[in-house]
Length: 231
Image (cartoon, rainbow, N blue to C red; front, side, top):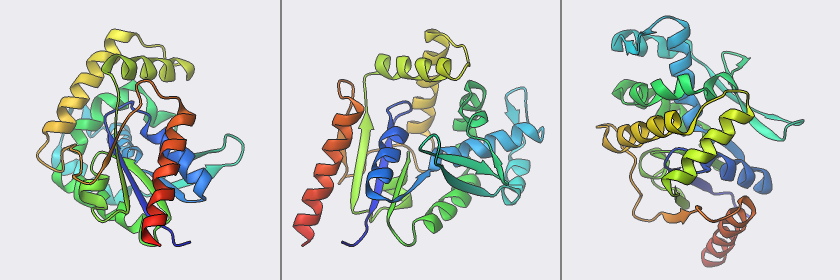
């Protein structure tokens, strides 16, 4: 059975990564978290002092891109793919609210998007990849065999994000997460470069009232149907 490319787009805290990881595990595909790559750029710029007081030097951000090398490794103990930057596991650091406050602005920079899109396409050259983000089906892999667009009720998304951060020891409240998500939604959908939009041929998956298992089975059925129509 030939491998395909699965592109998953959608709003923040819709469970894109959770579904993508589950699909990659079930299909024995490679999972690539495109959002983690943008988060790495934000983390790198914070560490280098390029971002200070919520402001950044655009030229310095662009010039720093070649200093960043990405790798995704499957952790056999936790059973999830983890993000490495320059050989260091940064999975925990890039999931903080601090990074979330900067990543949307960094991702608006044209040169940043061009650099990372090129890297993302290289990851998917041989297919057999599940990639999630905000412009995967529309820009990174416009010819992907299966495209999903995920969404959920805003309050559901906020609570999921609160629970996720609190479970990792990052104590946040509903209102500060709400402010961050609303701002990220605005930035993602209004940026000039590759804004978050639904691809015309994407299947919408509203998972407000769906369990992780129900979402996985729904998409596996789509894949099964896709192979039937291709054969």
